[in-house]
Length: 284
Image 1 (spheres, rainbow, N blue to C red):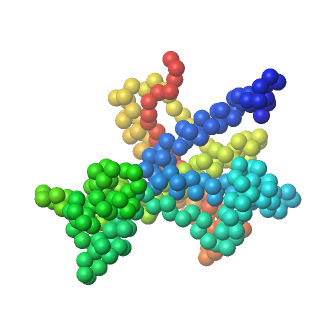
Image 2: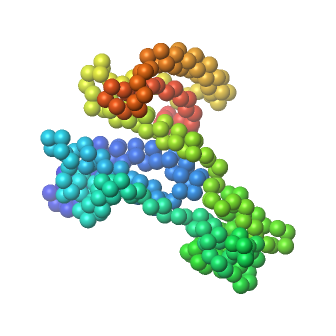
Image 3: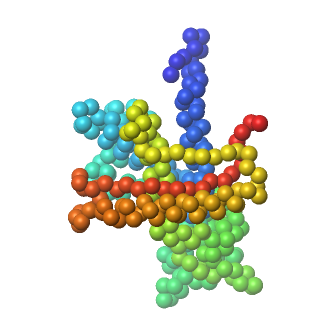
């Protein structure tokens, strides 16, 4: 990055600024999905760290060898010690992302796991808000600096607890899952974003149009609200028809091999069609 001759502050790189702005824009729906499902920033940060180390290690080596620890540290901005820790865990097949349990989830874990909050049969007790081994004491153990009232509100919103008219707090669900997202929905969220981002990123390095993966969009920033729903209906009808034709073609050309896609002879390929609708970003 260029530096002004009279200053130690790096000059502004417009491309880098645009990349950071794009990343910030991309993060909005991801942050919305994670917060909705009770995933903390620290968990996301750990996931990002692993991805940075893995890509820098596997794809930036010289002569097809893995990138060494020092260069991986330079590429990722992490310390050599942290790079080694992540790489060792990846090499051993260990889960490098240890869940940083958010406070609501931590409260539930303590409630069902500590003897002062369970009955003689090991079942979670009904808790008074105050009093010995009540909800306030539970929050002292796992709530950090968040007020008990705010934690109770969030647990109730997620359907994890209920509060009876006399103020007693009942455990309803043992896991903190605010949105009710299931495993299939979570997997689909990741696959859809990955496939689109992978295609766009791939095309950035391709100069020959023939080798580019198909990825085009049509949009207009001056569509009146009453026509947006009509357009979505058109996309749904025509998009479904197109996808059915393409799905038939894929099925007709499916390999008879039992090997998983990812084998050298098999490829995972497909196409996605999606409708988007939001506020205009034009300056006019």
